[in-house]
Amino acid sequence: MARPDKAADVAVITDKFRASNAAVLTEYRGLTVKQMKTLRRSLGENAQYAVVKNTLTKIAANEAGITELDDQFAGPTAVAFITGDPVESAKALRDFAKENPALIIKGGVLDGKALSADEIKKLADLESREVLLAKLAGALKAKPSQAAAVFQALPSKLVRTVDALRDKVEQGGAGTPAPAAEDAAAE
Image (cartoon, one colour):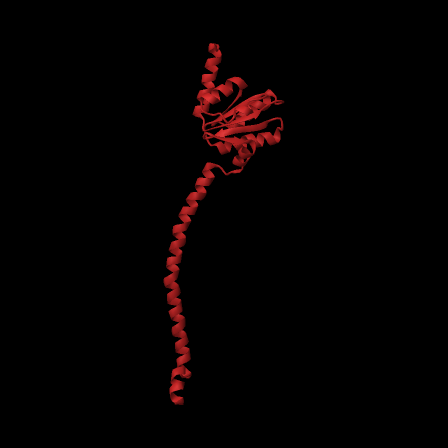
């Protein structure tokens, strides 16, 4: 029979898995307490970094419906439970791991889909949600203005073409007979 304190720990971790839209598993062996504190601060308010017990976390993940991570619960494990933008947290983890090679990203889960360590690094290479939304808004704004410019260009181009033809006719009609008139005179 499970001890009540362990059952409570599993329930807390299960709730964290369910409440977060992403979770990243890391190995922290070799990091100092000061480095762990720095990592927690770099993740910001949208992520909670917790050192966990593998057996309890595996049970909690399974209860939350996440079974793809079972083989990654080995060695000293810490989980970043991400409730905000997963790209920002992935960038923070990647950048911290570059400066502190002792932090190893094992894998994770994003919206119920398992991610490998390489996929998490690719996620970190994406631009933030705000930047992507700003680019989308700019693109949507640019398309109607480009269409308006094209529609305005057509009448002005027509006017310039008519003016050029009129100028050509006026210049050509003053001293030179038209080709049709020359053909009629030859007969």
